Length: 157
Image (cartoon, rainbow, N blue to C red; front, side, top):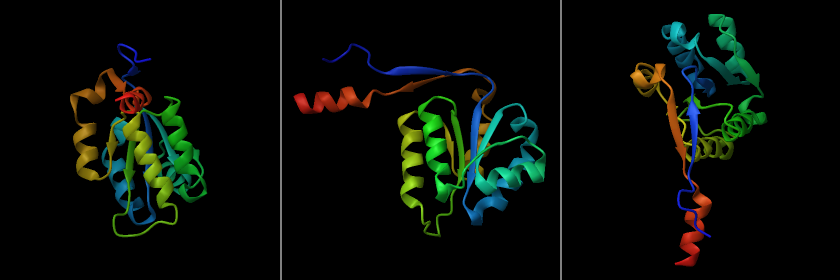
């Protein structure tokens, strides 16, 4: 059965729930970006994987809820929180020049972020644009497409 409007909407409050993730060769870049944007980030809820979350807290004093290291399941933990609508923003400085042992987990995390329509910043420029957008200080309604109904329509065609 095809519903009239199967997509779900989720409200993002003024305070965002932001996951901060970085591969080893990008941790310094992320820390530097966080220091430059510390005042803004301090007004939101922060989450991170393993070493990245510890470094952020050590370097900035910002509280960050820590999950496992990426290769030990932290990327999957962040993905699960996105699905559960506990995290609604992702800053992920990944290393485009280095293969990661957990590349499938990284791809899965990025896939979940797209499926659940959350903003994703993957470098300084995209993070700057997003964090300095007027939307950063407003409520925002995300629309999560019901892909199961789209898949069903494809099967019925």
